[in-house]
Length: 537
Image (cartoon, rainbow, N blue to C red; front, side, top):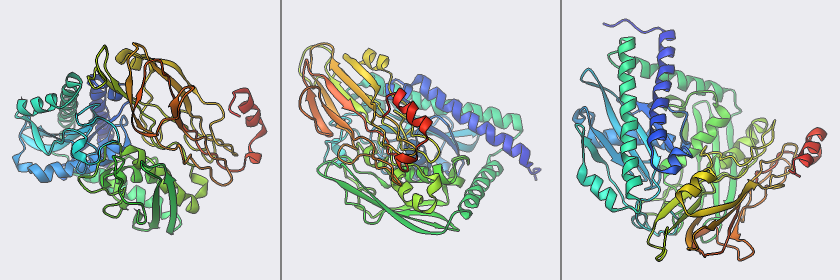
């Protein structure tokens, strides 16, 4: 019988695991073909034990990927069985209901072996810009229109690539080099994780991860429950109305805090939509628990143990628990609202810890078109230029400007967008006065102007929100400025749906500002003077 490992050694090993998965994620970041991954960080990476419990996640990554991937590994284990897994195997899916919420995210899971024994699994996710169908936009009316649907399949068999599957992937994308390259990047990412784990286990003399896994999960769960024990107990409700596709969508939540944990129920939320803004429950859960964790357990590592006391439910057929084959391609415009929906509940229980509403969803400028000659439809480029609005004012500080919360995705540099596409960015700057006024002010949005540089039209696959319903202030704070999308000196464009930008037209995008917190009259006079100097007023 082996000697028990001491707490200090276990803590060192835990920290080492976090370093392992960060190197795993950096491999994906450095080798990815898609700009939305290598420039914006739209990815996740993590290590799991044989039970499918996430033990550590990389700091690099997004909550929608990380926290949905946390559940997807269990589906891989259930589908294939640990007993069938061999060294050199790897598995893939982009099932929205078993993965990360839409077809444009590939999840690859790789079993890790140490001295011939399966000791854990590495999993990673990244966003692929184009996987066929009608493209990365909200126009689909079912998931089958939205692109290539990959069930649970083996992508590597004892180190041999499934060339048939690769050929299917290559044949179903407008960007075959980028898409196939990203698949290899995902596989390489997990391979690096496996290599580093084996080195760690040899260094510490481990034959398995069982004791370390139990330590991580139990300590994390205990820490979250200790934080929850200090909160007032009860149930609080909140509602948020947002733009939707054909009309407004209302999201309703009831958050219940008890000694056993925190549960968020979305009963009363509107039904799933006709177009692709619906959210599978896995993605709903991912962003809900992230919002809870930010307020309740921000200093506790994110893993299966810390996630365990945070639970979510939503009625089947609602927009937050859309059922297959609902279209889900642009699930982020609704799903990323959920931390702010939950904050509206928590603000009633612990008002001194909760910010005002922010932009919430990413303002991705999704474009595609031909590089030279021909009709739009002969796609030479396809890109999501990630852009962000302002976050809500914080209790002790102003909101952050041009910052993606809750997604964490960085904005795409103009230089990268202009290098990959034939577009010219005439303007990309902060939007003065867009943050809501208050004792603390909302963060500023941006103003962006884009034009074709080759005299060819291009398509905008619009997927914007917070146009008709801007971020709300709280406790007397002012609302943030609404977003807007238009042709400069021309017509207003729709917030969602594919639209053409013609040669000579300049696309104008204004991202929203965050809501303010508290009455503006209570703002520090020194900050008021600074606002005037910096043009924030």
